[in-house]
Image (cartoon, rainbow, N blue to C red; front, side, top):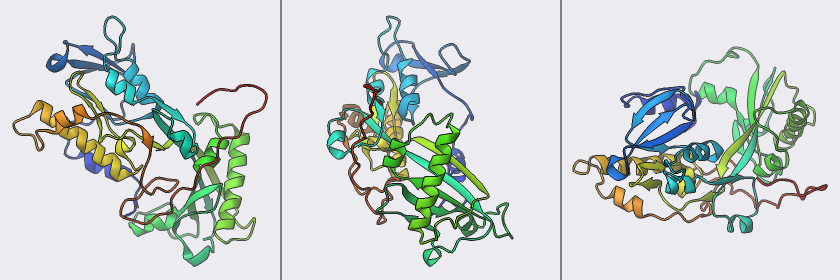
Length: 336
């Protein structure tokens, strides 16, 4: 299956059975009220001193990275101690692709980054075998290429270029290239953008069997995807804490990094929540106790995964071993 119209239709479909979905809505603070265990409730707000969003029975964080950790860190008791210690601990993270031996030493989530390049050309490219999408192996720069114009037409999705010769492509980098060309993703310097566009376009030409310089874009756009894929997994279906009424889910819980693993993690957390609040009618009454007892144990993600993640049920080239980051001269530098 391909997302012919992007991922938005999938989110819309999942929201159809919900009682209420509020979006867009940033949640930046969570404050415990009511006591411990079954008395615990949470007041949510847009920020530590932001707009109140209501009081809720349970907080499920379906996110990762720094933003998720910052939210969990706002959960404090009156004495300043953590009010959701188990969930908070599971959200500790760092960024940057690194060799497997280094990943084995980590006791937290390690996330890789990926550069995404979109370019448009006036006329269709004469690529090998009329390729519409491919995992790319043996390149230190690019890992995936997709003909977006062809993908959308498969789903009968109209585009602004229908009837013309304009063709849009998306190319993703390798995690190693993204690590070695990292910059603030919210404010990418023009010099970095120009350098990344040139390097990825040239490598795409080589891998697609095109003549050097034959790709002449009429439009380009690059974006650094800072928290692209988990390289370590927590070893639990989801994080669940009945005492604090909090939890977290994502493909980083069990792995491998994929949409399927993210969905399965969300279902595991949903089953535990259901068993907590409706034990007599829950689909899996034992889910809460089972997940509550699960211990987080970080390890490198297992299972075949390409640079962009895993695609269970299909054969994809495994991501190659990542080289250690080059040492920076002129000082100690800073960590991830």
